[in-house]
Every structure is written in C-alpha cells, then in structure tokens.
Amino acid sequence: MLDLKIVENSFETVEAGLKKRGVANLSELKDLSFKLKKERQTLEELQAKQNSQSKEIAKLSREKKDTKELKEALLINKNKIIEQSEIVRELEEDFLNIALTTPNIPDLQVPEGVDESDNLIIKKVGKLPIFDFKPKEHWEIDADQAWIDFTRGVKISKSRFSVLKGSAARLSRALMNYMLDFNKARGFEEIEVPYIVNRNSLVGTGQLPKFEHDLFKIEGEDLFLIPTSEVPLTNLHYDEILQKNDLPICYTAYSSCFRKEAGSAGRDTRGMIRQHQFDKVELVAITEPEKSDEMFEHMVSCASDLLTSLGLPHQHVLLCGGDLGFSAAKTIDLEVWFPGQDRYREISSISNTRDFQARRAKIRFKDEKKNRLVPTLNGSSLAIGRTLIAIMENYQTKDGKVEIPDVLKAYM
Image (cartoon, rainbow, N blue to C red; front, side, top):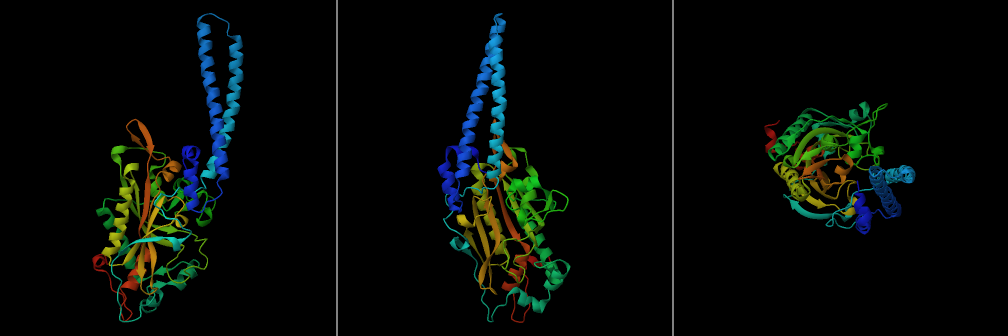
C-alpha cells in the first residue's frame, strides 16, 4: 500500500511513478490526501487546545480560583474533537479504499513501457540446443509418450486442467524435491503451508481487493484457494514486529496454485502453459530495507542457477512499468527456451515489493528504538509444470523420447 506521507509530501514522485505503470488519473488520490492532511491538522490543533486548557484548569484549581468558564469551553472543545475525529476517520477510510486498489510505485530503473513487448532483455544464459530434426512442441511429444492426459483433465474438471501420468508424474515429483533441496542449500528454510487462506492474507500481499475476480473462493466462507504460496509465506508474519537480528528471513515452499486466469481468454489454450491449477516452488524473503537489493539479486541468481543446473537455456528480462505486477516495485522474469515453440516463455518471476506489502500486512522490525516496515520479496523457483514441459522440449530425441537431466536422475 502507498505511504500516505509520501503521497502528501512528494505527490509529484508518486504521480511520475504511477504514470510509468499507466495509472494516469490520480486527482482523487491527491485531493483526498491533502484534505486528510488538512483535517488531521485541525484535529491536532483541537487536541493541543484541549491539553492546554486542561492544564490551565488544573492550575486554577490548585490556586482555588474559578474554573467554570474554562470547563464550559473545555466541554465545547471536547465535542469538536469528537466531530473532527469522525471526519478524519471517514477520510482515512476513503483513502484506504483507494490506496488498496492503487499499485506500487516502480523503482527508478524500471523502464518505461506499456506491455511485455517493452520489457528489457538484460542477460542470456546457456546455449540453445541444436537438433538435426524439427523439434516438436510438448503436446506433440506427448502424443508419443502419453504423459499428459488433457482429455480426462477436462472430463473430471473443466478446460485448463490436466492429468500427469507415469513418468511425467514422477518427473514432477522429482522436480519438486530437487528444487526444494536446491533452495535449502542456498539458505531458504523449507515450509509447508495451507492452500486455503483468509481475506486478510490476500489483502496483505495485494491480491485483494482488486483481483478477487481471479481467485477461487470457498462458498459460504471468507476463504480462498491460494494463487501462489507467496501469500501464506509472507503472511506468516502478519501484524508482527520482528527482531533485527532475526533478519533476513528466507522461506521456500512447494504448493499447488489456483487461478481463474480470468483475463487470459483465448491465450495458450493448447498444452500446459496456462492452467487453472499448477504446482510451483516459491521463494519469499523478508529483510532490512538497506539489504533488499542484495537479497533481490540473490533470489534471481538462485532461480537462474537452478535452471542452469537443469541444462535449460534462459534469459533475464527486466519488466517495464506497464507489465509490472500490482505489488512489485521491480521485477525480473526468467524466460526459458522452448525449442518446439521457437521462443522464450516465462518460468519464474522475482519481485521486490519494497515495503508495499508490509504496510498492508503490518510487518515491521525493531531497529534500535524505532519500528520500521520490512521489504518483502518473492519469486518462483520454479513453476513445476512449465519446467517439466521445458525439459520435454529441450531434451526430446529424434525418435520421440525424452531424456532426463543428470541432476534429476537420482530423484527419479
């Protein structure tokens, strides 16, 4: 959530940052913040007057002097404070409603741009595989392997669901275990989280209230299936004050993720690229403000090195303002090479949200005598289904079989 003080004191900075994201009309936010500032000042003046008059009455009482007029004035001022407090409360509620649906301010180094076509490729890792035959897409390979049952996935659920069978199911489980072990070796503590969370948790990480249309809600309960384990992992510390010497806190978790994909009608209708249910290993970190950039690089490196260890060529992409996620101040996507599709596709997204999520989730740390908001960071490490089909396409053979990366053989 946006910092009200920054909105009040540096509105031009807020406006410039949000325009980079395509958020143009900020007049309501501006007017409301300045009105709230004015009404708060009025309230503070009334409270100061109340304190001063109370002290004066106490002094006159000690001196055995008449305090009747002052007490009447004090009562009038008290009623004004009650009325003014209600005005401020209503304005704060209005500001909160707007702030909860306003995205984070991008970092200065985030490039201008409208959508993914304006993103900046900053690094390529690994060599693209060379085939002496025309490489197939993963659903074409599956016609030979019978690893993924799309038809029965639709039959028992609906479109954008699939069933993994035999070696694919084993490979998916192998990837989960390998990824968790890899992340643990990089300093991330393994956590197992619930797949159902409450509204507060989703507000805390920024999915609610703006994106409720993309979530699966539990009927009759104010509970939702998680869109990513970032939600429960970050909210483990909801409304907590952490100790500085406990930072950084680094978590990794496997979970299934559930998304309606409401805004993706007609996109990636074939194969396993875009599913309503998919498995993912996540990274989440909570650190000191001065160390969040260092942690961001560590998380990008962790996910990139994981792909390298699997022998999967990929590229690092810095997202432009128009393609940033709601809570992110900066994001680097890792895009893996799909030879059958002859293109790179996103497989990981690492984001630094600065203190945007922490302000919503009230996560702080004690720095000497002062409580400060923490930066929270999150990233995929990796989307398991996309990793599986990337292996299928990059490790396919001429006779239609799929080899297994060496690092996974012990897990198979």
